[in-house]
Length: 301
Image 1 (cartoon, helix red, strand yellow):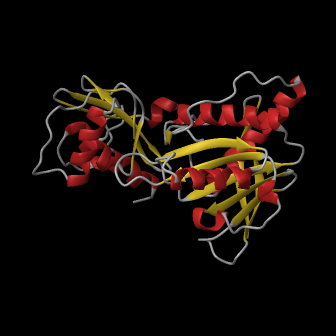
Image 2 (cartoon, rainbow, N blue to C red):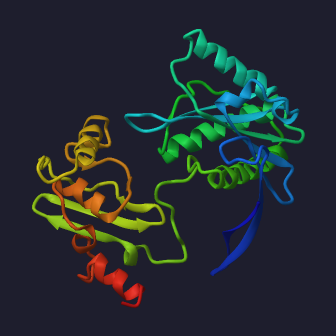
């Protein structure tokens, strides 16, 4: 399978768009098995492999030097990830399996995503690991389980540049493979006016701003939420989510401490107000129009 995606670059005042070609190969003919992903004109490669296939995999490429992500699906709370590096990635993944069996590791990962590339060495993969951990923590989509990374890598100036480009390509491929771990919840769009996109709710002591995104709706940092939760009105899932965010530091003294992504504008409004409402009707632009009215205009209704 070959997919085409578009990235944007800025040249002066103009927004330039260019495409990227991604080749996905289902090695065993199934999306639930091993997948390789490659970008045209790049010597790197992504390999997505389920936990149950690691030990028996006899591919030469996963024995190369590279970095890897171990994705853990949590039943309660945010998903987590371990980011690591190894000169022989397969051997390191097998060591993770042995450590879990010996009760030396407590986290259980389901999928590994590996990135290899020509001429990667210990210094380069240490640099990649450290930068990827930094970016993942900044994006705050996953709980990062990696504790220590090597921060004082000595490299040539040209190598730093090459590795930063390598990271940009990792971002593209890991996103295409279904993991937005390296993507901020709210991405800036220099082609639009931020103020025109901001929507607000002000009811009683609750005051929040938010924005529609491709993934749903983001409540922006600094919002003030209602303390009380309507057990009769809210869904059990939203009640549990409010409890978790109030206790884990996402909300302190009723103030939202970081941008929070919700699946819809209604879920975002329910979280802010503490009771069930219609998000499209409650979120309003600075000119007074509701999100529902804005969407009706945009869809021609």
